[in-house]
Structures are given as C-alpha cells and as structure tokens.
Amino acid sequence: MKIADVVKRKGDAVVTVGPEASVGELLGLLSEHGIGAVVVSGDGSAVDGIVSERDVVRHLHTDGPALLEVPVRQIMTAEVHTCTPEDSLEDMAAQMTDRRIRHVPVVVDGTLAAIVSIGDIVKTRIDVLQAERDQLRDYISQ
Image (cartoon, rainbow, N blue to C red; front, side, top):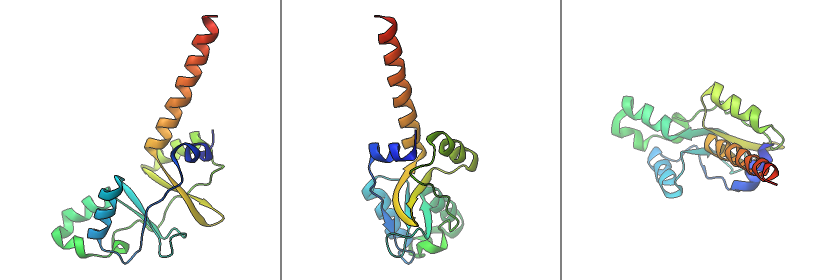
C-alpha cells in the first residue's frame, strides 16, 4: 500500500498555522480540531515547520506560562521529514518509528497536500490485515 491509500481513506485536510502565531493560538487550533500537531506554513502551501503538543509540553516545562505568548516559530521543528503519496506505507511506518515522529506532512511538487499520523498508518494496516483475515476465513469455510 501507498501513503496515497491512507490519504484517500482519511482525507487531505491539513490544519496550518503561521510562524508568527502565538503558542496560545496554536493550542486553540489543536483543541478546536482535536489534533496533535499542526504544520507551520507562512502561505498555507509550503512546509516551514511542524509543531506538536509534545513541543509545547517540553517548552512549557522550561518557559512556564510566558510560553503562551511566544511565536510558534520559536518552538517548531524546522527540519521536517515529509513524504509523498507514492511512498510505501510500510516504509513510512518504519521511518516514523525509527525517528520517533508521529506526524508527517505529505508533499506533492513542493506543496503541502495532506498529513498522516502514525495512528492513520496503524489503522490502515489493521484494516488491511482484517480484510485479508476475512477473505481467508471465507475461502476456508467454502
């Protein structure tokens, strides 16, 4: 399977935040959309960075409540690992596990097209395995 299959199942909606938005605004977006990470993009199509709940927690420990007023660019991860729709689901699962990352933007020709989480990948893999199991059970019981 390919990342395109995951995106087809979950949709291609991506929540972005500008690099100058405050961490407080970021938290509002995370809460409003029920998500764990947001792509940082100045124009809504380029990937300038990514920021997650984990980034906020790590900085909150050192910066305290003043963190809420800090621009997202100060806590985002600027070196973002991305993928394409043609990338293998299995390869991406392995890379995400090895790199300990939970969210990967999907990029097509340099433009943000979607985002996949480790949860999306695991769900897709489980659905495929269950479908294969059902097919085998049906074949054996015939």
